[in-house]
Length: 150
Image 1 (tube, rainbow, N blue to C red):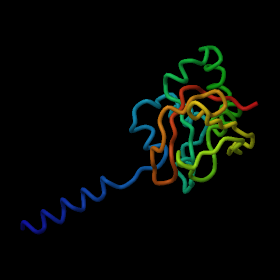
Image 2 (image 1 turned 90 degrees about the vertical axis):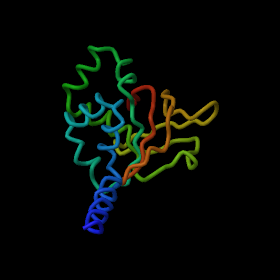
Image 3 (image 1 turned 45 degrees about the vertical axis):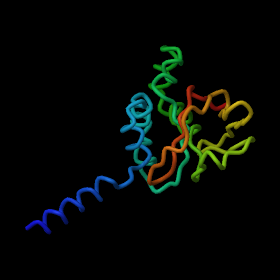
Image 4 (image 1 turned 60 degrees about the vertical axis):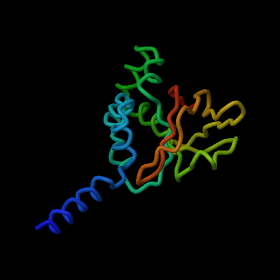
């Protein structure tokens, strides 16, 4: 009996220790409610739950709060533009902080982000404030502003 309980406990522990995808990881962090809602509106949840790998520069709720309300509301109600903005935050592949180099990086949206590394890492004009949040299909780096494609 004790052996069966131990095996069941180990199975539950192994299952709960399983890695989460990019979306589940962001939702669990609790500071990405606006991003999660935007991904839902744009129909990108299944994509970011997909195989990947992806590197996501994820704006926090505070970053979205910096966008003027009228502009954010308009963005959230324009699926094409919202999709373009959100996919501009995603780079194909897994890029860990130690591998970041200054320069241009092509996004899933098709445009290029400008990465700078002097005085901390920046993506366009957003500061990277937390790095290397691992998910089973990529990595999240937290940024303090929403970046917009040119």
